Length: 302
Length: 335
Image (cartoon, each protein chain N blue to C red):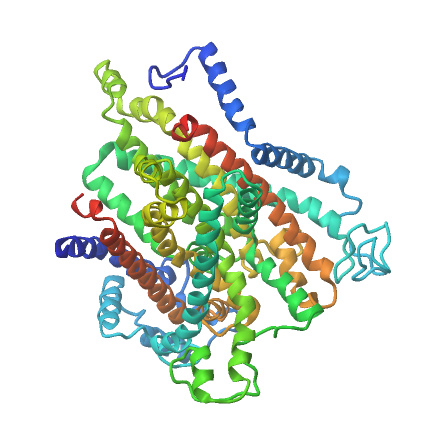
């Protein structure tokens, strides 16, 4: 291996490009990961261009078109490609707008959980002793509850809604980041390069964030991808239970909740939102698998 | 070994105290009055307000309330449900067997399919079986199970008419509860068709609840197996002429199972979270549905008790898994 990130805080530009090239080489060998990447890119584009792509407004109710089936089925028309729901809204348009919510939820939740977890984990791992003990016991307490149950109760307490759902999910996902960061920091903090930096007079904050943190990033990136898909799933589950985004928001889980009573009459109202969730989560998980393989040096050698 | 067990137990004490603080505190950290909050939009009469304040002990300082809460907890008193007026613990225990039955069936299904699939995928690495099974596993892992449940209902209950949509057994059957497990009780009742009905009601929820653990177990088994198959002792066993089947089945599998057992144990949290969704979809009268209903009814003593019990169960199972891990992997005991 050419690049040893341990050697310096800031690898020169050439090394960095080399590292990136090496990463892409391993990542692109995983066919599933590449497919996942393209699907994710496509989803981001759909979310960005939603107003241009959607044939109808997401909350527009067509009084003449309740529960119209998809176009290929009898009674369907190309006016509503994937049919309409019980109050005459175009499902395709709602799905397109829904992609914005899912990606937004994933980004916000992972950012909060990642930043919170990194800071907490750095503090615990760096200071050790009773600080570490207290912090890790608090994390244990959060992890003792099934995540969806804790999120559900938190949202019930904070009040149903998308913002509170995101806060709750970020809170229950955060301990994973804290634990990973702590473990990585503990492994790194007595290595020569850290001690050298310390002897050279680096302050605590610099040691934590500039010296140690960059060398702990790989597992955090992988966990971040997994949490992204978990966040989407949990938010959809909360929406489905009526505790997440509230109608008429075209969030996919909320759409499913609204569709539940029609499952035996209109299969399309139920099928498409769930399919959208599955495809999104699957694409991100595929990418996560690829990232893990590409970033894990243990697997590279084999 | 005893020191190992005691150490693990001692380690859990602060976590458990934390859990009680969370369960105790979640109503009290709210801005506003907990009693008014429970009353919701319906409002409440001043007399009833006073009565509830006293009954729930909110007129006392918080630390005192917490100590009393702990005291009652150790006597097995989790308070009374605001809706049904019956003790929360007895409600929990009545519904618990339904969830255990479902969860046991799910984990059994997940293990029975997941481990062989993972082993086979590892042994035939790169084959079509490996690719198809691991692709399926990733889809299962990514599945929004509430949607999956609805799809199965559309197909098997709606289109094919094979399975019932909700509940644990057909209303035609009525028999006394002996064990709380419908499969056993229906057999004990000796009524014709009762067992069949119980099985038919159990199938779809089991599949739905098993989906994610199955995917996780299959993936974990495969990667544990791959790791072990690359070890020197496997090559040695192979080199001394043992048949491949024996090497895989005995030498490799036994060691690969160590992380897998942990994985299976860790699925308890996943199962409890899954039970919330699965039971809601199939109107399965267990803990998950009860928790959701209690949350919607603002029955906070029930939510509080449920949270506490569920966390205690998750912790207990994790402890057992930890101990089992020490048992099958002696190396860990001395660390």
